[in-house]
Image 1 (cartoon, rainbow, N blue to C red):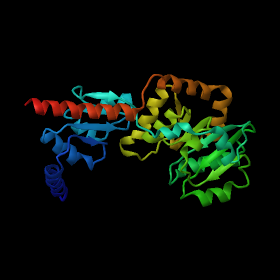
Image 2 (cartoon, helix red, strand yellow; image 1 turned 90 degrees about the horizontal axis):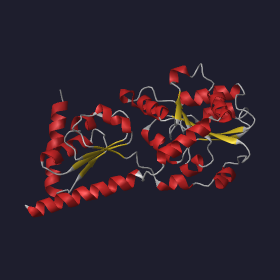
Image 3 (tube, rainbow, N blue to C red; image 1 turned 180 degrees about the vertical axis):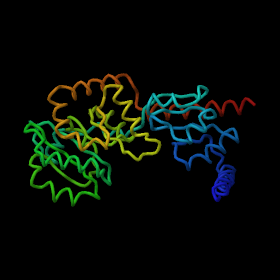
Image 4 (cartoon, one colour; image 1 turned 45 degrees about the horizontal axis):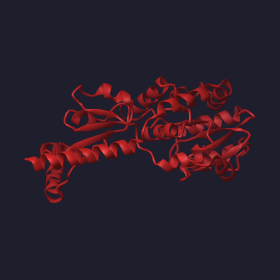
Length: 303
């Protein structure tokens, strides 16, 4: 019952902010808090653009798609869920350029890795992904990590102590840690990654040309991580394993087999092909925003 009043209050507050700041353009990134701002912009004939990270667009993007000047898509397949009247540009998702500048040599030294072995990177975000962590631990206990492979395992802060205590006797090749803020050092030595299928994670893996086994978070809104992973699989860049099948899939054995069979390298080549000739998403988006502002300014002056 309170929702209509909350929405009305947000619109009134946003209208007042517009009167004070007089923005030249509004950029929405899909979160629900961007809806009143983008909606008021449209009502006041202020240019509005949306940046949609996921393969399945969020409700804000779906509702405002027909009114936005442009929608910048992180995944090309997202346009299938939008009205044909929507003006979309497939840009990919922005990533920090420093991510691609990591040194393999520095990473080997920093994590005490063996440069002669292949490296499997396990990611679950800063808080960790318990389903992935449990699967990796079970795989280690089965001695599934082949002798020519080593593990770079970010458990997340929540799970680190428990995972470290259980893994210290079976993880003999690699490093285990709660979190690391030098993501460039994590991606640089990775021959394959085991990770969730969030839009930012996939964008970083793509930018760093790391093939992956994607395990979507099963409770993501509208199951959007699964759709993200499916698009990566369709592009030949990743393999998909659902979390409810982790009891049947030995995750480290699978990653090692993908390395040994050449499947991981074929995925890396597919990512390179996807990236070839494409400009960084942040540059494309920024330049388009500046062009829209300039065009709108000229149009106002002409009137």
